[in-house]
Image 1 (cartoon, rainbow, N blue to C red):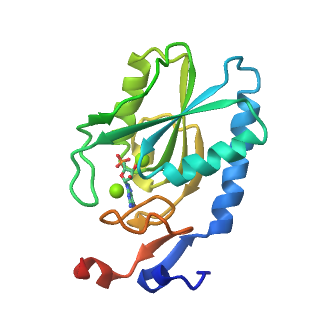
Image 2: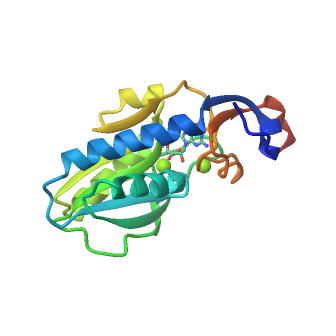
Length: 191
Ligand code: 5GP
Ligand code: MG
Ligand code: MG
């Protein structure tokens, strides 16, 4: 299950393995590739730092096998959330580097939970006059289904637990784990 690395000692349970992530990423890339096979100016992938950075890198590489060509854009936002929650009030820390007007945009997300950040982002990208905007997310939590956000491509529906790994952090740690798991309770009291 785990690979004998230092962080395994902090993990209570692996939720999604490295292999599952790799296979699902390839599947999602194939779907996106098929759906966008006719776009002429390629795709613009927008990653919201930092959580989606692993998925962005692997998804872009997987898409690269099939096409269409993609440009990679990164945004950083602060959602004024505390600890493990988010509020939906968003401030841009790093904006897009280019004009997205007329472009086909895919937002690459790590996880959709309340969807607050994402719904703000979709309004923002629409206001910048993208030709189309869709979302690919590797993970989705149960609360996300209550939010009327069109998330076209979903990797895994996961239980309503706080998870770490593959980009997802607890206090900026555990992002480098190759899998996604749940921390042992003592990790939180230690922090
Ligand atoms: P939302 O706005 O959909 O509630 O969540 C936005 C962000 O909260 C996600 O992009 C992610 O960075 C963070 N988040 C949501 N659920 C989890 C989780 O289980 N673990 C971690 N580490 N971050 C989460
Ligand atoms: Mg995110
Ligand atoms: Mg975080």
